[in-house]
Length: 137
Image 1 (cartoon, rainbow, N blue to C red):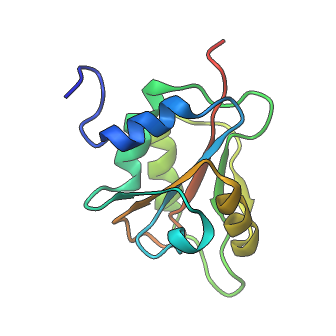
Image 2 (tube, rainbow, N blue to C red):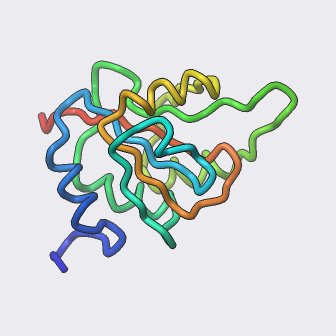
Image 3 (cartoon, rainbow, N blue to C red):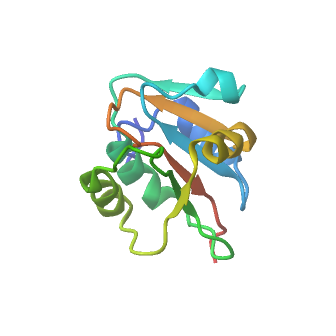
């Protein structure tokens, strides 16, 4: 255990966050996300919720300042969003900025190009989130 690092940030995720450069993206995905189908670098975080990972990741890095650094999946036509999901993610991130909403297909494409996908046990509908790393200036 390292001081100042949330217990939910395991060694593999910590290594991945360290290896990422500015502009690289990471997806924190719910339990139903097709992580292994869209990306070869999948980190399993069974028993962990996305909001806890967000709170643990945020002190370790900066968000990209040159593009919208947070994206979530938009609902499929006919579905609706639970606003409490975004609210809890914003609170965990301390993020008041814009959040891009991507179609399901566009989110899968971005997830496929992401540095890694972290598969959690979260079951919140449309609870997947993509983060773009910035630099430390």
